[in-house]
Image 1 (cartoon, rainbow, N blue to C red):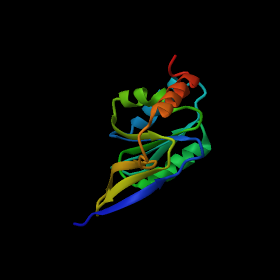
Image 2 (cartoon, one colour):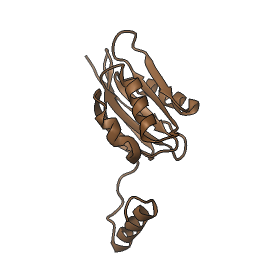
Image 3 (cartoon, rainbow, N blue to C red):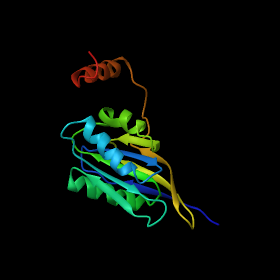
Length: 162
């Protein structure tokens, strides 16, 4: 048996955040929906999940049709069973990530990012699996005092620190 590796670009609207993970049960679609809706009132998101047995359908839901369609498109492109993609429109991963990880069916979260993303997928004759992601770009240097001061100021502007 041979295996093929592929780099799959994850599509998202400008400014949107993406969360990619793996879960193990069809119930996850509804549980993740409820988790997101409870975490941020008025949240806009799309969610898609690939079944790995039975009819092997891409199950989807959300509060925003465009984001839901993109999440579905991304799951189909990745093509790996039990993988889910969430695209957040007006919320940040920091608002929902802890709750997503606490959903009993969630096995792994590969990433949560607004950067350009590529999923690294291994395919063989019977299926596919996500090995990891390429998130953004490689480091270009090490922060100095000025960059540290800007990082600290930014966190306070966003309200994450006082």
